[in-house]
Image (cartoon, rainbow, N blue to C red; front, side, top):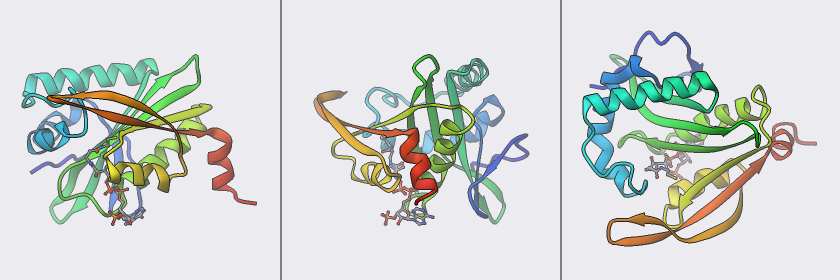
Length: 196
Ligand SMILES: CC(C)(COP(=O)(O)OP(=O)(O)OC[C@H]1O[C@@H](n2cnc3c(N)ncnc32)[C@H](O)[C@@H]1OP(=O)(O)O)[C@@H](O)C(=O)NCCC(=O)NCCS
């Protein structure tokens, strides 16, 4: 079972879910979530999930994420949901920040069984509020492979503009796929938040 409890900081996503920091404090639950999902995720993230995750590799990855958070180059988050027996780790959200350019790239995934309830839409909404609010960013980018309909729906739902296609840019074993680039600007986000 993947549980994550007693996080020092949480950002509520409604009554049934919350964002927590993705650091070494959640190593065991995160390893369990990766073990259950890496084969599925390999289909969508070129190169990132080709091998089964190891506890040592996962911990090192989380420690890197924690350092990147402290130096301001990343906002590494995990999505947790409330289950009957406590909080359960459900997914991953990340903001990769280019401070000098005041821009960032957002990424996300959910574990199997957590799709279809708006978790990523809600999580990315909170991240965009922070990115365009407290962090003062000007632009956030979101990239998906062209065949990733669910992810493209997330981009559309959040008001991103499709800006272009990087032809055959994603290298998967035995095939290359097009990558769709979406962008959202601070003024578009603020306007959507306060229409009229
Ligand atoms: C891409 C991915 C995160 C999208 O998951 P998702 O469940 O479709 O996205 P959300 O969590 O935002 O949920 C949206 C769905 O919940 C529904 N929903 C329910 N409550 C909602 C709410 N409060 N807000 C928004 N949507 C809500 C929507 O209608 C939508 O339903 P649909 O699937 O019938 O269209 C998921 O498919 C995934 O992890 N895929 C594998 C990894 C991946 O592709 N990552 C992205 C790489 S670019």
